[in-house]
Length: 117
Image (cartoon, rainbow, N blue to C red; front, side):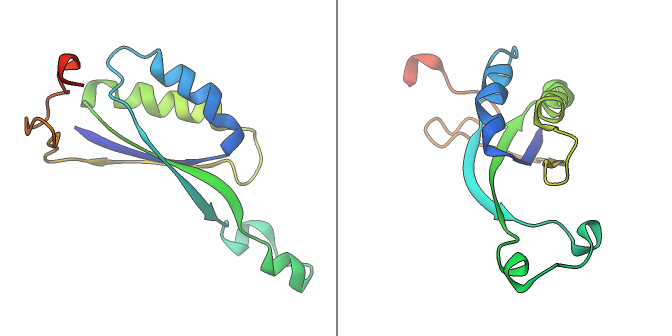
């Protein structure tokens, strides 16, 4: 299993949600608000104190636990939809998951039974 985390622009979420929900085997996702800034080296020096103090921009953080077989497809959809070609589009990273358990069923690694929702 893989854990996919991504930081994206909020305006990209509706299109991304639709694309991910149409993917066979998509397990769902958690979405949280996030704020951040890029490394200063990528932008150059700040022009004013106001610019330094307002450097943080609103983003969304997406977290997905999925089978290895669909991880690349999910990452591809996130990057294809999320990119605008400008700094601040976000980032996607993938890590291995050794174990995941659905709390309501305590079945390791198995998706929940739709009848118990």
